[in-house]
Image (tube, rainbow, N blue to C red; front, side):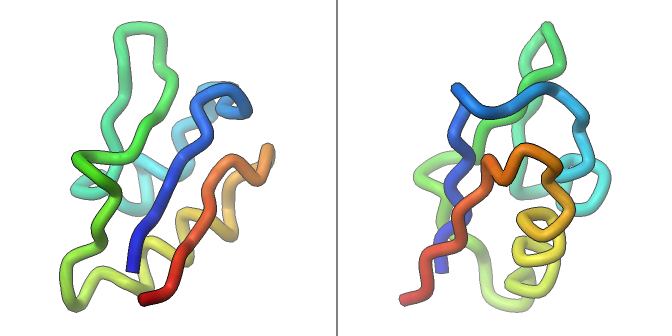
Length: 65
């Protein structure tokens, strides 16, 4: 599974970071991006989906393997 954040849609609410800080990076202005290539480690799939479901801009896409 991958969690991809569209940085052009992100408005910096940081809900994703609050729910899955190990999967998200926040820049100096508070905007989110996915860590690395977006691969979600085993056992963190639910957190990734929760982060995507709580993004007000729908900037997070979940890609199943």
